[in-house]
Each structure stands twice: as structure tokens, then as C-alpha cells.
Amino acid sequence: MVEWLPESYWLVRFLFQRSLAVIYLLAFLVAATQFRPLAGESGLLPISQYVERSSFRERPSLFYYYPSDRVIGIAAWSGVALSAVALAAGPYWLPAPYAVPASMALWLVLWGLYLSFVNAGQTFYGYGWESMLLETGFLAVFLGAGPSGPPVAVVWLIKWVLFRNMFGAGLIKMRGDDVWRNLTAMDYHYETQPIPNPLSWYVHHLPDRFHRVEVLGNHVVELAVPFLYFAPQPWASVAGAATIGFQGWLMLTGNFSWLNALTIVQAIAAFSDGVLASLAPVSAPTAADPPLYLQVLAIVLAVVVLARSVRPVGNMLSETQVMNTSFDPLSLVNTYGAFGSITRDRYELVVQGTTDETITEDTEWRTYEFEGKPTDPTQRPRQVAPYHHRLDWQLWFAAMRRSPRRSPWFPAFLERLLSADEATLSLLAEDPFSGTTPEHVRAVRYRYRFTTPEERRETGEWWSRERVGAYVNPVSADDLRLRWGR
Image 1 (cartoon, helix red, strand yellow):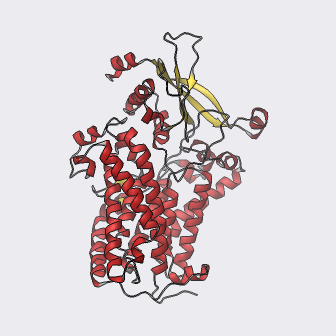
Image 2 (cartoon, one colour):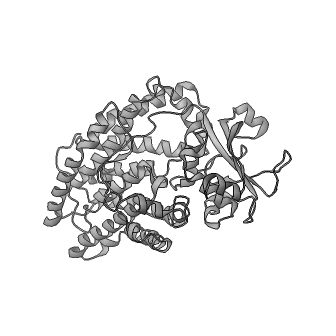
């Protein structure tokens, strides 16, 4: 039966905020363990480059004024601690007059800290789920806490983010690669996605008919279902459930950082307390109206979001749609979209080193192994998401090109390997030199494909690969200084 009566969202808010806290916790853990070797003082893209090439107004960040590894570490671990407080529903346990302002302060600090990492992270933080987390996290500031319910307007603004997330992805696919229109995209996707997971090999080998239905289902969920987010209950919940099921399938078959998990968190806003209570043995308290000041702030927020939505919506509806773009330095309202094109061939960079002082045909090369990206053909693809291995992702992008000219961080990466830099090596799964320094390193470009079931039965390998050429010929530390001035 369609419900036209006003719904309450106390349970929705509680579940949404706890789930968002988990995403923040993961994001800050990634920052704590990876930001410094990637974009810190001595990172592959040093934070000094961000300070020199940007203004605070263009890309506001705490690290613009305090570009030090110590401050980066304090900010990251503070984010971890505050995310844990949010996960434990800290503000909810405060007396009623203090719960809402405490919650607002907590979520605002989390947003501000993460904004600092995104705006200073350069290439390594250039992903759509970063701006999506910031936009979603900013809305969480205005949801309130404690015995009062959330402003309904803010719940609808979360639906608006979800709509742009899903509908934008659907539009860019239909406008982009022909494989989305002829329903063959999934013939390639599982094999060529940035970091396949343990199920990717199996799903890749499912019948073609299954893959055609997959693509058709993708179009329905991304282009038709989003309009139901704004329908009355139970239709909005049906749309939310369809979105969660779709994103859950993507999580089962790939590694897309927290993109899918964050979309699931957004989809919680499509439900209502009544629907949640009917699905689980829980009951929502009788929530009071939000404080007047929070209701006023929610109205102001809605006006700001709608005004700032003009450019993102214009981009989304444009024939020249650009995906994953922020239109303001605070990432308050953004445009989204993923996989507008599908690569047909998978390329990988195999990075190797040797202790030989002179390179000959008999030189023995040892291979560096990574946490997520494929290297060893016998290694089963790993499950790493929703954790995000940023170096592995950038190596996937770098491998699409024939040289490192458009990956300025890559020579610095080789330099760190030649010096056995401990921070850089912490980003890898295996250092074949156990902390000692190689004399030379190189990067070889390969074309990878999944083995067939017959090949895997015979060889035990998950991948078959073919050498395409040299990405970086053998170089020593002196060679790097002469060639790249490092």
C-alpha cells in the first residue's frame, strides 16, 4: 500500500550516520598509512608541490599552512579517533540540549579534516568517491542527533546526492562507449577493471547471455530506478533496496574502494523508519521535532545546495558530460559518473630490480609485488575494497600509457625503490630485496588476460600475460638523476 503520510527518519539517521562513520574510519586509516609516502613532505608527489601550485582559496587545506608529516599524521589519526566516536554514536548519549550541537561539531570536524587530505592529495586523491564522501559528509552535519528527529529536507538532500550519483553514471555510459549500448560491456569489465577480486575470474566466464542481462539491469538501476527515490513509500524503499542490491553485486565482483559502500550508505535515506521497523526487530523512538535553529539551517542548506546544483545538473545533461567533477573548492555539490568507457585490453606494469652493477642478458630480475594489482600470474586476485590502495590504482592508470610522461610520480617511485625507502616499501605487498638497495630497477609493460578454465586447470594460473615492451628501461640512481633530474 502506498503511504502518503509523513514519515519519521530517526532510525534512518541513526543507521546512516553509523554507516558513514565506518566509511570515514576507513578513509582516515588510508590517509594515516598512505598519505605521507604518497603526498607528504618526501612523498612521490611532495606536498610542497600542492602549496606552490595552488592557493588556499582554490584548494583549502590545513596542510597549506602546515605542510608537515607530523601535522598530517596528527590529522589522520585524529580523524580515525573521531570516526570511532561517531561510530559509537557518541553525541546520542549526551543530554538532549547538547546532542545536536555536539553532533554538528563532530561531523563538521570530520568533513574539514578529510577536505584537507583531498585538496592536498593531488593525483592520489583524484577519485570521484573522495568528493562524494565530502558532499555526503557535509550533509551529515545537519542531520542532528539525540531524541529529536532529523530535518526531512536534509534526508531529501541525501537522496539528491544519490540520484546524481546513480543517474550521472547511467547517462555517461549511454553517451560513452558503444559496448554499453550493444550490451557487451561486461564481456570486458571483470577482466579489465582496475583491481579484480577473487570472484572476478569466475563471473568473467559466465555465459554471454548472463552478461547481456547484467548490462540491461545496470541501465534500469541507474537510469530508471533513481526517480523512485523521491516517490512515496514503499516505492522509495524499493528503489533503495534495488540500489543496495546492485552496489552489493559490484562489491562482490570488484574492488572499487568505498564507492559502492558509500552509495549503499546514501541509499539508506530512501527508506523510512516505518519500513526499517517492518524489516527488522527494531522500533524507533517517538522523535521530537528538530530544534528550530537546525530546521532553519536545513532550509538555508537546501537553498545553497539547489543553487549550486545548476552547474552539476547542466554537466550531467550535457552531451559533453564530464564525470567525477567538483565545481567548488569545498566539494559541496559535485557531478558523478563512472566507466563511461570500457578498456578492451588490460595492461600491467611489472616493476623489477636487480643487484647486478652491470646489466647483461643473464641479469636476474626480482619482481615487486603489490597489495591489489595483478603481477604474479599464479596469484589469485585479492579482495581489498572497501580499503583503498592508492598506488595500485595509479599503476593501473599508468599502464594504459606507453611511457611515464603523464605519470610524473613514477620516476620518484623508482627512485624510492633504488634507495629502499621504508615508507614507499610499506605500500607494497612484497619487497624482493628485504630492505636492501637494488642497483637497477625497470618497469616492463605486459598485456594481461584471464586464463580460460582449461588453462587454469592445466597451469594453476589466474592470468596469462604477454610482454608488450619496456615502460622504463633499466635505470640506476645516477641514471634517474641524469634523465629526470631526481
